Length: 77
Image (tube, rainbow, N blue to C red; front, side):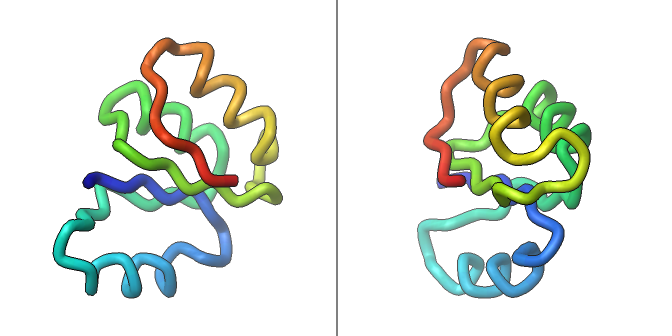
């Protein structure tokens, strides 16, 4: 399963934990809301982990914008 991470604080630590799992692939890691929306337009992961305090639009608005674009990943905020 491909995972996208949108977080200012959890990115590298969470990435290391997830990469140790055989069935997980980190698609991308971003640190702000606009990068998360753009990455999802280009490469939608199977699972998207979003920090509720993400810089820019915040986690809730970032989630809304991604979901409005059609494809529906599993979201964990």
